[in-house]
Length: 165
Image 1: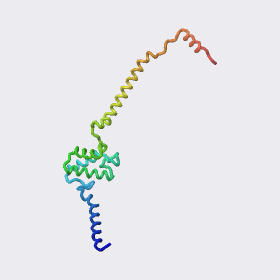
Image 2: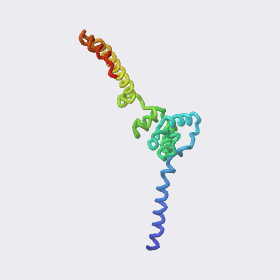
Image 3: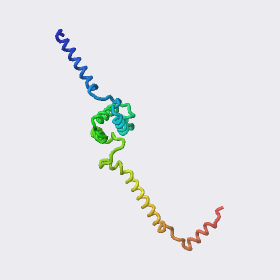
Image 4: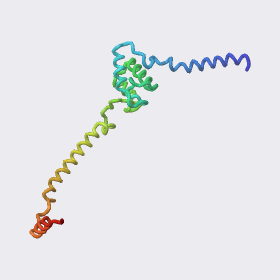
C-alpha cells in the first residue's frame, strides 16, 4: 500500500463508522425516553398498554423487553410528538403489522368472525338443543311400549311366580 492510499483508507473507515452510527443518531427518541409534555407521555403509555408485542405475542409492548417492542415504543412516541391522534398511531402500526398488533382488535368486516362467531355458535347450539329436547318430548308418547295382551300378562305372572331355587 502506498503512503497516499493510507489516508484514503482511514477516511473510508471513518465514513463507514459514521454511517453505522447514523441510524441511532437520527432517531429523535430512545425507546424509553419520556416525552417532554406529561399529557403526551401519558397518551404514549396508554397506547403502549394497548399494543401487542409481535415477538412475545401475549404481552403489551409496555411489558416486553424485546428489541421490536422497544422500537414500537419509540415509534409511538415519535408519532405522538408529530401530532398524530391515537387512532392515527393505531392505523400506522396496523398498516405495518396487521390487526394482530392491537390487543383489542377493531370491529370490522375482516374480523366479524372473531367478534360474533362465539355468539353465533352459542345460539346455534342452544337452538339445536331446544329442537332435540322438543322432538324427544314429542316422541315420548309415541315410543311408549304397547300394553301387554292378556296372554302376555299371564306369561309374565307365571314367570314371576316361578321360583328357580
